Length: 369
Image (cartoon, rainbow, N blue to C red):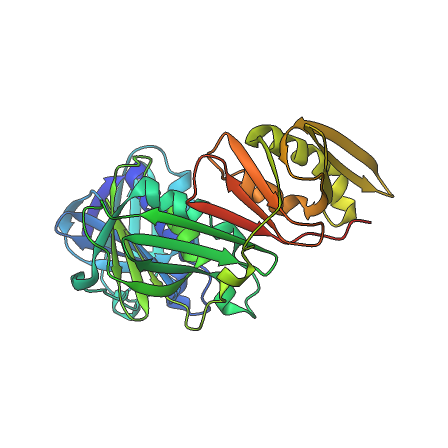
């Protein structure tokens, strides 16, 4: 086997595939699988739950494949000069890497021992624009639980039907739901109701290109989902189980609302959160006429107070929320204005962008003390 590529292309390929290496205890999965293809070189990282495969251009003089420590290879390539990198190997695990005056003899494991990524058939394929998919993920995934004891809630509920895609995530304290109309899409998506690990979608969001119009091919199977965009493929195992019926926690009606400028409110909450760190991240929102007063108080730190312009409908209201949960949603809204729809200080709050009905965020209140 003999291959040559640029350091830049190799670095980008290793960075992408390396997102999922090092999590498994199997020695072979601590490695990259690197093999030749008709168009160049293919680099794969896999942890038996999520796999990432990146194609890079390369000059292939002799075909072959090898595995090598993902950490060692990444560290070496990061330290190399900006030049061409050449690989040669015997197919049994021994690998030589050269770049200008540098040479490394590395030991790996046989490429045949590397498990194959699951293949998902084309019969279930549909497409989305990269920008639409990125927005879905960024506005929902942050609300997923990180508690592995509740595996279902570490995932994102994906429902497809009636020309609409809905993603939802909850950790029991807040809920994020985003809808996307796909009736004008290039292909009609199949009806589905699945749970995708939030970690897989977060990795996908990092891999999506800057070009929002780029086409992402999505394939569904009974226990796998595959995303392919440009030269990158991500495959993830789905989570088995029943996602919570989140519709029950969405307030059916509210009798008060407060509308603010999104960034003005975010900046006020961000400053108050500095004091709120020592008080369970609690910030209190209180309306006074055409102002919203944001306060936080901690016995060991002091008190923060700031007001922002607000448009109130209904009676004055006072309610406390976790500052982090507020900032999480304010940071992903692409609307200039945000509206809080409320009932009382002990009832869940409903947060929406003022210029759209495709997104909602439900947040549980905290006790006002």
